[in-house]
Image 1 (cartoon, rainbow, N blue to C red):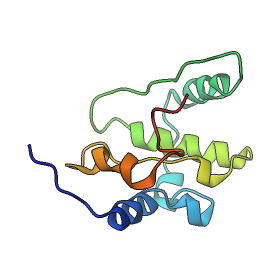
Image 2: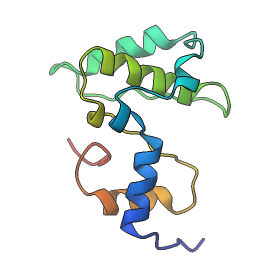
Image 3: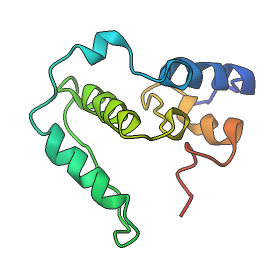
Length: 118
């Protein structure tokens, strides 16, 4: 597969679109109205646990397509923002767009999207 060279400004524009809470401070109303997923509280608890200094691991959210992983992440984002997290400190980006994932790090540099940070 040949990757397209997507211009940096297009990548950043797409990331901003995917992360509307950077501007508004809240997730999209469409997702906010959805019922929280059955395991939301458990997942939220794991995320809060890894925010402590003592825990050095990342919770992983896996599952088949169309079961609510994105909704769960967006509800988590909403809960963290309501708890005082700076909206700019939370970021998502699509994993299934050809060539997009590979160019995100190069376009935005170190920061919330840099998966190599310790």
